[in-house]
Image 1: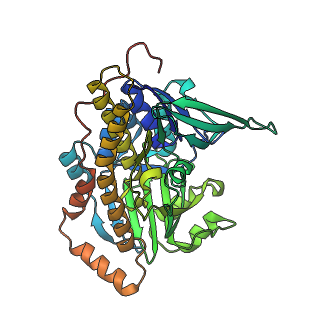
Image 2: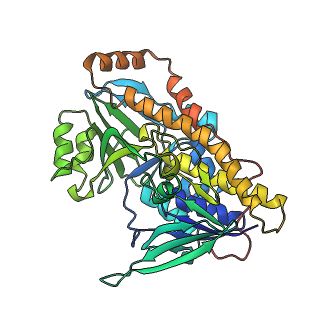
Image 3: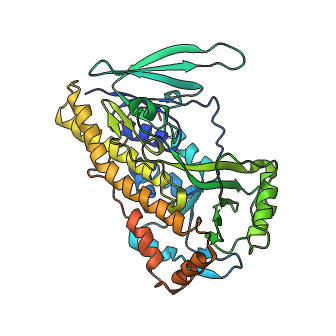
Length: 415
């Protein structure tokens, strides 16, 4: 079968896809639009399904060492009272691993380090796909050198394209021009990582106000990520984002003031939250597969966006390995198409269910703003059985990679 793939996008999903493909014998080229990978980002929580996917990709041990388990914390009111406690030990007992928190930059570096240095090309913008040949895809792209040098137009011929180019995926638009694309969720998020370590009494917290949420994730090195989510129309920006967060969350409980005091103003990131409310008719077209946010961008309310992208990467690699073995070393195009059909059939129902659940969690959590509705929700949380939060986590995190496991990278290849 064909053994050369182009992955478009060097985010978490794209790098994971490249790792998975290499483990099943494919030569992979990753094309990234950004000229420099500055590791910008805040923090991320990974549930058991994400960690299991990283294990299957061969980097789970490194991630566990760099991450911090989330054993303590839960959900609070702005005054500091607890609505629900999180029992991280019960989660670990049920799934074999706790939820873990890790800086996005650290996870990204771990994934990059597991790939050959020459497999990633930056400063490259994919402009078009030529899919007229039945067994190949021609990827057209432009490379812009530093400074005022003109762009260079070129192309690559490949057996497979994996589009991991994010919520505003250009390739998704090329494949499905009639699809409406991402829509604004109604919320915006400001977030940052503290400039240094600080004392925290919990590993993870979220606090719900009226149409607002403030949360933090503690890291292994003592620093923490915080995020502030607000009901807001898209496009609104502030001259001093940190000052705006201080204003909006003035009077809220500790450690919120301490987290903001430990943050440099220039470290604050601000993004509107978009999602694919209209599901795609397929995650594949010919020899092109969509993965991660390009396929199923969702709101962050369940912390499952990156986990689902990691699952995608493992399932895609497993499907290609399974169908590749069935035809030995042949180069017919039907095996790739069969593998992508299997990937689509497995991933679309799963990710659709998680996307809908995440949207519902946001509407009943951070986005809820009417005082009576907020009071009713808070009362329901306080009265819920102690294991309710754990059961909700298990509903989405109890995922096992396909069997047999992905093989190790073949001997002699440079990592």
